[in-house]
Image (spheres, rainbow, N blue to C red):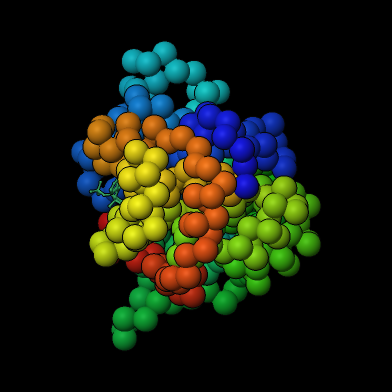
Length: 312
Ligand SMILES: NC(=O)c1ccc[n+]([C@@H]2O[C@H](COP(=O)([O-])OP(=O)(O)OC[C@H]3O[C@@H](n4cnc5c(N)ncnc54)[C@H](OP(=O)(O)O)[C@@H]3O)[C@@H](O)[C@H]2O)c1
């Protein structure tokens, strides 16, 4: 567990490239275009400097516009923000990787990305249909490509200079280990669901030993109620330290050495989620002793995201 330095400013060095990833990240999985723009600007204004996007979220253009307008208004340099996006399942074929990357870059209005992730380890039928289904409604997977082929195409993106670092998302040790062992450029970041009900301790230890950053999504359990925000231990610690349950959960995630993604949609919530401070070792231990176990996303076993409206 990390000590009580300013958690809001913490940046974690990556194992390749020159970048350091801000531990406190803002996620852009927001179905509504107008809300994407306001929420992204509010997050930037509140102090967030790490933005997580994906071609599958269908809103890279809106995120790009909000970042441009917000950066100009706040006099924030491109080098001061860290932007990630993700390769979708229907673009795993090596020849599709660079065009997909360039298309994301164009939509975001950027000249380079700080991080590019393979969104899930599942390859879908290659093509422009992001959700290819057979006549029975089952996903059509692509047996003609494996994860290492796709990874090698990402390594080439790093060689070409517009992509500073690469990583994986929605993987477990079973997928990560073989990629780590064969990769010429090792994964810098692994983005997975993680919170006190799904601490992913074994994966976190593996990553820490190799200088891979574990980037936790759903640190608030997607805000679902009942859920983490109403957990009696979280609520009692929050009352004791005069913070909100959300702030307690975010501080815990950063102090245990992960980076995180949270998605506040209003300016008040953006300020709340940015205004975190370190918890005592006792409070961290209490959270570590929570026994409830719950995974909210089945994307790790199917490649199908649970929180994106079909066609969205
Ligand atoms: N790789 C993947 O497969 C994957 C999957 C899912 C997410 N992600 C990434 O992770 C990001 C984080 O999303 P998440 O859903 O996991 O984030 P989260 O922060 O765990 O949950 C967001 C939800 O929590 C609520 N919330 C936010 N701040 C709150 C606060 N201070 N108090 C009470 N409720 C609060 C929001 O409610 P309101 O809507 O009412 O504001 C929203 O519904 C996404 O945007 C995306 O970038 C990646």
